Image 1 (cartoon, helix red, strand yellow):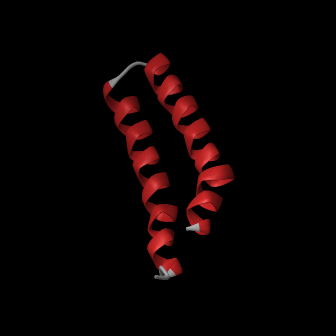
Image 2 (tube, helix red, strand yellow):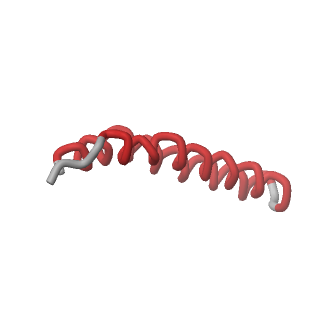
Length: 60
């Protein structure tokens, strides 16, 4: 059974949106250090997804 490529493209806008919302919320409610940690960890995870995860999902 083939999946439509648009099904995978949902993550392409959803993940960065969640990341941006997390950084903004942490910046509004938390300290500068917490915002930096959330931005760094989220950026690394997002980069790993786009570097490796999206290709692995495309093979299915």
